[in-house]
Amino acid sequence: MHATRASSSRTCPNKLLASLPAADYRRLRSVLNPISLPFQYVLLKPGETLQTIYFPGDGVCSITQTMRNGRTVEVATVGNEGFIGINALFGGDRWLAGALVKVPDSAAQAMNVRAFRDEMNRRGPFVNLINRYAQGFVAFLMRSVACNALHSVDQRCARWLLTTRDRVGRNEFPLTQEFLAVMLGVRRPTVTLAVGALQRAGLIDYGHRRMIILDRAGLEAASCECYAAVKKHYPRLRF
Image 1 (cartoon, rainbow, N blue to C red):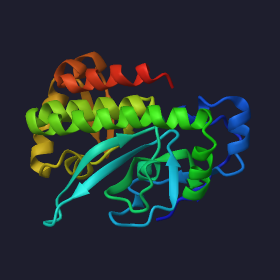
Image 2: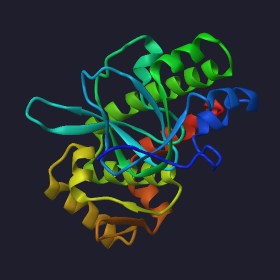
Image 3: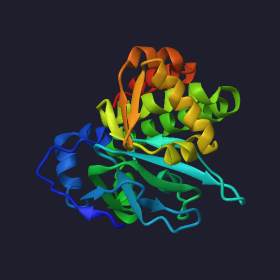
Image 4: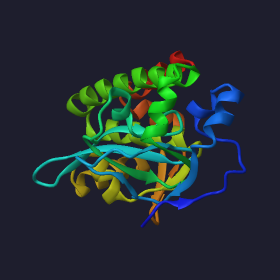
């Protein structure tokens, strides 16, 4: 399974890139490659040399950590508000976690690390946007650590579904319970119980490997406080 070329005729849906002044974005287009990313495509593996920066478009990617026993948990989510490859911002050349596609992306853009660092060295609008996003990403990580430790699986499941819905911009998206279990760091039967409870409450409809959000307000009420906290944080960064 490989990333494939996608049409570049549409306006870039990545909010970071779309926030650039027109002249800066036109210059960057020469080093940006439009690609599509299939479901569960592995962007990066732990310890792998960081060669490419990914800017999601209409999909969602997960940053994961895997333990020695093989169990994996999601530690962060990246959609069209950000980029994959934040290590490059700090001079690192090795990726410290896993990164994979959790919602297919037909409008992502890729940039090699050298071009990314060259643009950062220009000290222009691109640097300001990337640095503001990094602030938001760190805040997201801190909130995720607290959430995973203190909140119930049902609450975290509701939060995960809401966050994914916000990033893809639609109420329906592909999802398997196996994948959701990995993202939440729990066993499949635990996810089955959580999804079943949300479905019986009329908040979601799940079947045929598709998730549909039926009652967003109800799902927000079922979520923990972390969803609202993170949602309020990103607009303050002004991108």
